[in-house]
Length: 171
Image 1 (cartoon, rainbow, N blue to C red):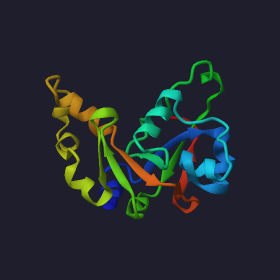
Image 2 (cartoon, one colour):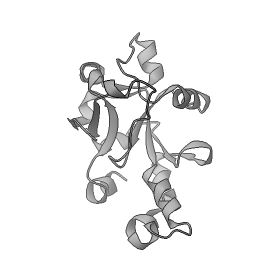
Image 3 (spheres, rainbow, N blue to C red):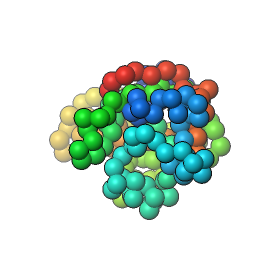
Image 4 (cartoon, one colour):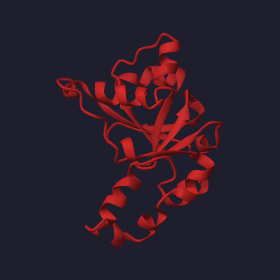
């Protein structure tokens, strides 16, 4: 899967955060919510909103760092806080996929499936990637494409600084 990311999916993985968190990320890497709490750290601007954090906790994801195959993912809006946000896209070395315990979540929400990274490649819907005509098919192809875009890499506890290759200041 690392090779596929490098050769066909833009070369890197992505994580969207806020520029306000850059100093902490530079010092500690990307931390899961649980790992940050264990270290007594509070993000200056949190990812997600109250609902997404509650769902992550319910689904056992609060000790995971979320990465995306695509940079088109947006941070959920926080009522009244959008004027303060300065989105920053971090580019992550796909080698992080090889770390112990990494999973891929195929889809989002109640219909998603979590699989070990080593198995994910064989369960991903690659047909939607290789056949652009499927993406525009309103009888189901577009839904398949949206699911493909929402695949996430779930890294336990921390993405260390050595895997963070760079950043861009906007989405």
